[in-house]
Amino acid sequence: MRIGTQISYAGGFAESVADIVELEKVGLDIVFVPEAYSFDAVSQLGYVAAKTERVEIASGIFQIYTRTPTLTAMTAAGLDFVSDGRFTLGIGASGPQVIEGFHGVKYDAPLGRTRELIEICRQVWRREKVVHDGKFYKIPLPAEQGTGLGKPLKLINHPVRPRIPIMLAAIGPKNVALTAELAEGWEPIFFHPEKAADVWGASLAEGKAKRDPELGELDTVIGTALAVGDDVDHLLDYVRPQLALYIGGMGARGKNFYNDLAVRYGYEEAAKTIQDLYLDGKKEEAAAAVPLELLKATSLVGPAGYVKERLAAFAEANVTTLVVNPLQPGRESRVAAVRELKELLG
Image (cartoon, rainbow, N blue to C red; front, top):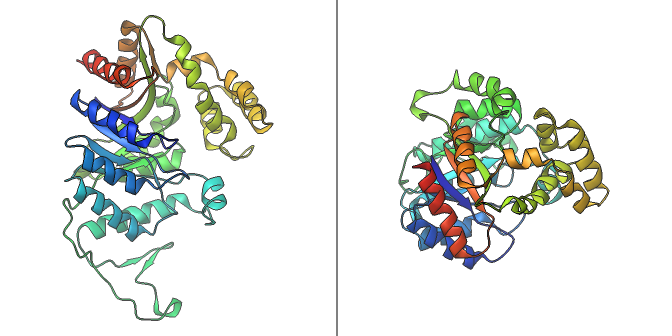
């Protein structure tokens, strides 16, 4: 099982990269840089690539609506080049609040657009002349829609790899099936190992039945809080605001994918309470309403023996990459937490 972490976009980027340099020394496998609606992830990924030697880098995530498919492919190829073949392209649909509210782009057909984007990216990386006649993207642009001067072009540079790994952030049934069919990696959110099969098992099976064997096994990448010790349960309170934000604030009532996931996990009443409180501006009360059971199930927080049991549960649920958020403050504590996790994994 690989161990990764994520760089925060909330501030302190240089310090976070210094952490990554030290974590690389104790065996960190991969680092993710998010984008959301903060600084772009591309410049920061390039900086991380320059400061590290071995650790893989990944976008976590680029939104599919904010770059053209060919620019996404060019960007991925460039990041793979500057990192000497260490880049994973993480993409996802995000949600209408960000796509329409921040970018001014219509949020439509996430499944169809994702499928076409993947096809175009892989065509670019193979250095084929890009020709795509899809429902959502037409390359070159048809003459009647432009100047008529467009012609098929191929990437000038030779990519380090003809197929850069693609990871999809997906939680909806159809999107998860698409991921299992087309992507090298899958990134769900607040992953509950005991309930994952009931929620996603059928979708994963549907997609894997159509999967090209050349893609290999699906890399299941999950994020989780980390704190190993005999008196660390109180640190779960640091996780509450994030879950409350997603379950309560990432979308309107009836239009929140993360709230829907909490309901599918069996927390219907709590999900409604969290959303009502959050949308009423009562963010602290919403955080307090996140069930302790959900916090513990989706985290690695507790004594070493307990954390080892949770690691076994994640492994049983086919998790292959853990993206950990060490909760104890300070670089030494974060490095020690990753080192201990590596030891627990054997």
